[in-house]
Length: 142
Image 1 (cartoon, rainbow, N blue to C red):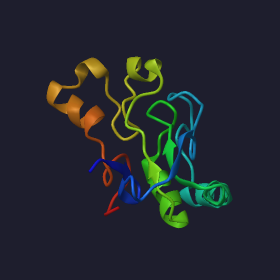
Image 2 (image 1 turned 90 degrees about the horizontal axis):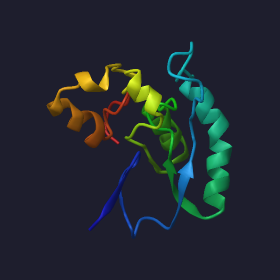
Image 3 (image 1 turned 90 degrees about the vertical axis):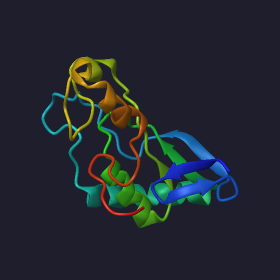
Image 4 (image 1 turned 120 degrees about the vertical axis):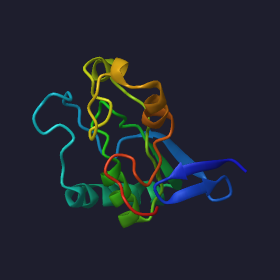
């Protein structure tokens, strides 16, 4: 059975109803080279986003596809904290949003490298296999 991989573990179609396909729970629109890029206190984001997640839930949504990919301040650790605090599944993006983030070597907030320098064996782990736990700063079981 197809599954959607979320911050609260895999979900099947029987687990889910309406899904918001393009939302931003945490986003940083500064460019990767600006001071403070991608930085935030997870507790502050949880406090800010909890009422918004509750409004989404009350409107009938059962999951959110978060669109803040690499290049827009992706912080999977923050998304996991918001998800766990609200018991609401989020889908974490694994791609790259801004071409200049790739061109300037920002592939991941924890691992800045230039794309041409990524070995072929690492490309798969960088772009195709990021899963929770372990994407960005996440740890533990989801």
